[in-house]
Length: 576
Image (cartoon, rainbow, N blue to C red; front, side, top):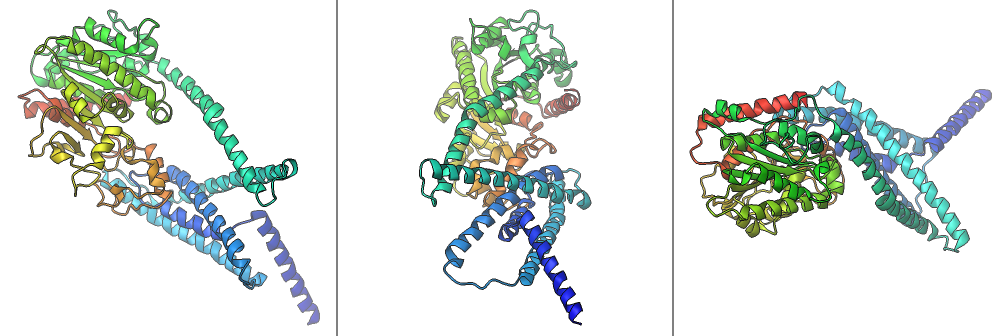
């Protein structure tokens, strides 16, 4: 009997020793684990657009790591300020391990249940957008990926902590920093060095590398972009801007779009060959700026004698929405001139970080040059002058004007699509919207001059709309419109008010979590059906009809134009 008891005692001692070794190796903070599970659960709640398991896993892993870090801080504060002053008896090893096992199992169960519910929420969002939903078993992969991402982030933090403590010891040895302040001083030095390197060498190297990488794509030409022969197009043999200098997006823009024959076939009326003037980054010489070359192209094609002219601010890569350009050309029977310049090789997300000032400067330079030449035309012989921009292009386009009065004085209409939350004029209009109107569908000054639209009915209100008209197209589910750094700590109006069409009623705001959710949504803003997210489709046609359509456009002709535009967009997605 004594021998049996002795054996049991030895086994328990060995088990305890093994558990202690595991505890030392894993080194989990259980308060942090609870908060990590809470943050993970919040992160899989609905966001603006559907997310597949891969995106959800990445974002949930980051959120879980943030929660874990917060829990570690709270536990440290408890030990330092409460436990050190109030004697609290420590539980036995058996009780402590039982509590930890319960926490581990509980957190795992909560995470699994949240993933099952999240799969249901994702199916709800896809249903609202008319898309196919995910399956629950497929979505459970999110949990494994989130765990891997969270562990990687925590491991990176612990590496930094080791560096800070090492630096603190050296500071204490070299400059006699007090022991209590050494860790904080070490962290401060490390942060200053990191920020200096990132803002200087690292950021410049990153964007230089990105520019180099995307300039390679800029040199490519899809087989479906063929050099135009019509003199009305830049890149043609008659053009002042060579075909090769236009870049990937420029070559696509000038080689596609409706011809005079196509417009005649769709509208049933004789049409002119539309003018498309484009200047790429490599079109510019030392003797001429991009804006000057663009105006020279307009003069070469007699563009200032057309009925309508549109100044387009491109997105980062130089992209112009072919549907928006084609809509104007069809509506005006080809009696149009559309002009645009490329200001960057980078896609909009990277351009937003590095080229916002460049976009604004390029937009101001182009518009001012075109407007100056346009103003030289005799009154009564000037084309209608419109401005257009989409996404980052709308932000650059806005910057060509000091304010609403300046805008209305210089143009005959403005159409801006999917404006980023940081757009200066857009922000002013939304902040000053009429009382009682929601952020996702604001009404500014009774809609007398500026209107916001999620669909065509928002543009076709009975109230008077004075010319020149300004219209913003924005979906409640477009993350590019609603993303802001303020989401980190501030609940936005669009999540305090009733949710807009296409947005789950279950979407809630949580500090840090919502910011990361919407940030992840940015990468999939166009991975949804038309009419949602950053996919505006033929709504741009309705925008042009409202802002600057010529009189007497037949409703049946409009639907024929819509069908032609949608067919062209489908073709572009398939071959580009």
